[in-house]
Length: 242
Image (cartoon, rainbow, N blue to C red; front, side, top):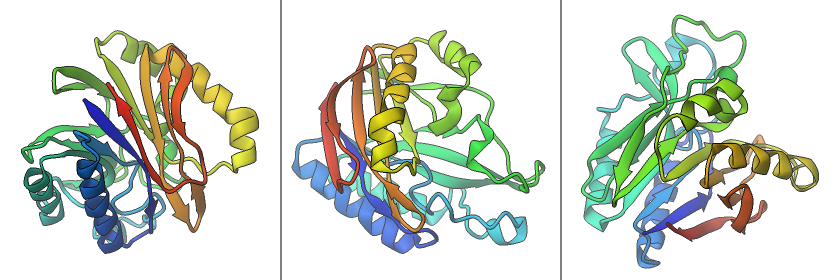
């Protein structure tokens, strides 16, 4: 199968613009024979969309049953391409940083909730801003995938837990705002080291944001080595074969 990793720009609190980017990228990836396209953490609303006031934020986060999710599912079915994206999920009176994977028929195969707390500000209420508790796998086109969001894999205990679960590929959607210099001179090697701990094949993909600045970049790791990449500062899609 061919998977597209999207280094694309989101705008905080502009679901309309971000949705258009998702749709346009789905079409582009389909035209390039991809079976799926994946976007970074919290891409739908933007990583910095929340205000940390639950009365306000409950209007920004959306549930799995929201019409926007249904529309994306319909687009996946219409085009015949799977799609994964991070979003701020509302479930009852709780908000999570979550990640949805929708298959080619428009069916939700996976809804993962970030289990590390680094997505939220210290002032965030523990009652309303929550983390998930488990890693989970899903199957797509005869491959088994395990997903973790951004800081999840910087905790050794989480890596140990993930490594106890069978998977063919680890998906690692992130939001990173390093400068290109810091990334290339320091962090790039650190992430490669973490990827090596996670298994044979790890796909890491970051978004672009203009305010605050994030620079994108997508990386295909095999045994901790980058075998293919779309470097930071590039708006585009990296196609990898699994």
